[in-house]
Length: 213
Picture (cartoon, one colour):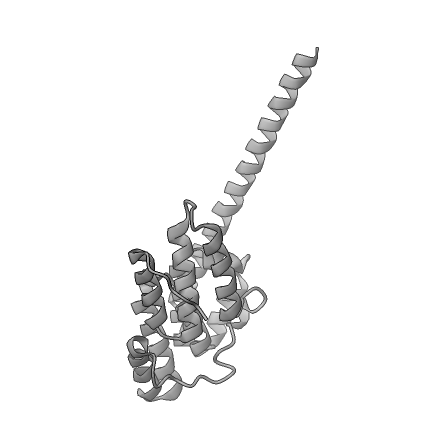
């Protein structure tokens, strides 16, 4: 009798897990469909009203961050619509993988050019990436996360604290590459250049110590 009960319990547990997985897959599929619809609208955006309408239709906005190119789509649309141009571009810059930094730098430069109506800050931002000097002065408003992400976005300082914690946990783990990437991204977000980011990655490749102050 006990064996039958245990077998039945195992079947129920398996069915429950299967049902939960099916629900999760259905929700993810539904979200992808909604994102695709929103992306179609964003690509066609030319005015602030169109941009805001497209965002309102997008549920679970945290999912946007799971795939970096989605943030680029938003930033490009925001730039064309004139809605929080610099905020969206800096959000891309702070959250994009190191392999895509060039595109993120260009996104910020475009946003600065369109906001200022000249190339001064745009060129300055591009130049500071490799020198770490003569940095662009952003306004307090420009440094805020885009309104749509404000409820769950974190500051670069918190981003680095979390990245370092993960890095320490994964020093001998299977996700060390991901941990290194996280610290590198956070250093770039704090510095607004790629100097320490690149130095940190190089130190990890060569097995050298790297002090983060």
